[in-house]
Length: 195
Image 1 (cartoon, rainbow, N blue to C red):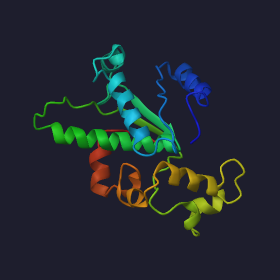
Image 2: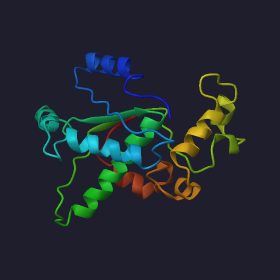
Image 3: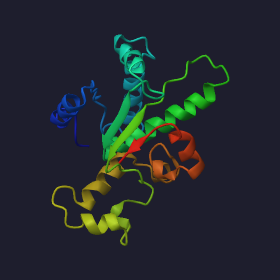
Image 4: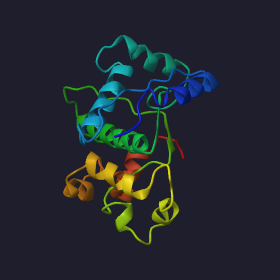
């Protein structure tokens, strides 16, 4: 509903300048015009493009980073704040599940996993009906007087992104906190995370 490559341009440029890395910030569709899973699909398309899964010119990022070391993604990291953190975790989950399905020799080559994650205040639990419904939640208490992003606005964003409450309550790609401990271990076994 809010945020874009324009609103995060300065941060992306700073990250690139400080790290010496190429920063790719995909422009993905936003709710309410494009509810879940549109943003996730856009980010997965960008991942395939950057890692060369689509035979793209940008595919050299993966091989160049691999030559410099790094984990499964060949030195390619995912990051995001708030909803972007949700998308980064959902992407890792989807990639791990797809790779697991294709390890038996399917027609699609497996996608590389990222070498690491950097998440800032990721919004991972959309299953509780929103922050306003969690009267005892620490987040609600902290956000109750927030002038920048009040709890009511967060709830509006959640219900716009995933209008179907059954999806919020049962789909771990929409609400990654629904992953079981075993699923979390499988997804993130080889991915260092930084919060």
